[in-house]
Amino acid sequence: MKSATALLVLCTGIAHQKANAFSATHYQPTIKLTKTTTSSTQLYEQPINLNQLLGTASPATMQNYNLPRDTIADGLSAQIITRLNKAVDDTRETTEIILVPKNTEDHFIDTFRVEIPIPLDSPGLGIELLELEGGREDGLGIVIVNDLVPGGNAQRALDEKTAAQETIMYGDLISAAELILRRSGSTTDDRTDLLSARTECLGYDSTVGALGGLLSKLSDEDGGSNIVEATMILTLRRLRRRPQLQVKLYYPPSQDLPPETIKLLPGDNLRMAMLQKGVKLNDPLAQRYDGKPTGSGNCGSGGLCRTCAVSVMRGGELLSPQKGNEKKMLEDTPRWRLACKSWVGYEMKEGEISIQVNPRQW
Image (cartoon, rainbow, N blue to C red; front, side):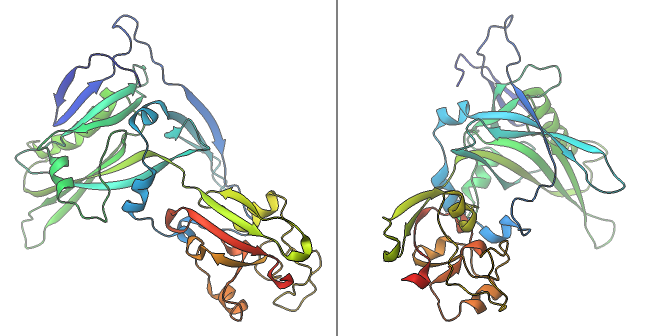
């Protein structure tokens, strides 16, 4: 992290602390942007939705993956993403800049939201910002939360939070903000307005301008009338370490192979990970559930051939839950799972999973 004497400036309830790593005459835009082009690429033979498969992680679980301050400051970068629209009648590209980890193998960027009530007589956030990178003519940069102003609106909101809510801490980047205004109407019905701004990977001036622009609506002569309640919802992005899962594999005695352990990350498919590690997963003793010939023993992760079945001796709660078809197919063997339908890291938890490979041969 760049360190030097910092200047504290208050603006619309947002405190600014700028890391002055260069003198005024030598301060240079140091943020390095990488560019990549993405399209809808299918990673598995069958389409999947990892968010549904892995469930919802609790804030308490996610706190285990927070990183030290120095790691956060040195571990952030920005990337320009160009997405190709593959619609038949639309070949346009969309471009955005996003926060990314420098070390993608060990770290990831988590996204969550925090709700902050804004008193009408004190329309500020009370968040101290630290500019890590900036000074660019295009207004881009990396600005993170340095601290919360004691007694500020953000601090008061977090003091009242429940265990099911995330907090705001050093290193968080404000990706977007939504200001919800409830107004008293001329009739019995109230009116609700929603204003929003995207602030991800903007420099300090652009970030404060966007947030201050939203908050200014509370005191605007035209827009501030009839407001009875205001709430700011911040979308925050945080650098965290990747949870790791240790999958210990035991082979049938007839194969005369010692146990081995493979390391996986949440969202890894068990079948694909084992095949990539060279594990002889497909069992020649298996029969397809639909009665068709097994053939090569690979139905393309369709969940029909059952050749990739494994017996889970420990850590079954760390796998994505069984769906109806898999439950029916394996109802006589409750410890068994189809590796092709098992994703590790359910609810973003880490731990150890013990598995018997080729359970029909035991």
